[in-house]
Image (cartoon, rainbow, N blue to C red):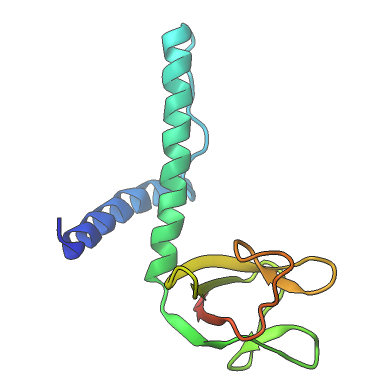
Length: 139
């Protein structure tokens, strides 16, 4: 399968998920069990709930990669003791893409604080993030 075909499939999935979001305002986390249910119904309910959660995650990731990049560069600590890129100050919870030098690939994560300094979730709570190459997407 070609990469372009994969993205076409992603766009079809996003379109279907958007219809449900438009109907309920969000992807429903509730799957109702019929009034008379047995163990098989409960099992199907559990599996349906797990699938729905994965679709919510997939939708979130698809929405993330469709956002344009606002800024990119190396993280530098500013006078407020926060890291930033191109005049974009980052604080706890801020979503980013960061370049993993070891794996030589981009990964998505967020900035958090460990009580002493900021870190990138997935990179390490105790590792300095000064100089890490990141991308910030428009929100």
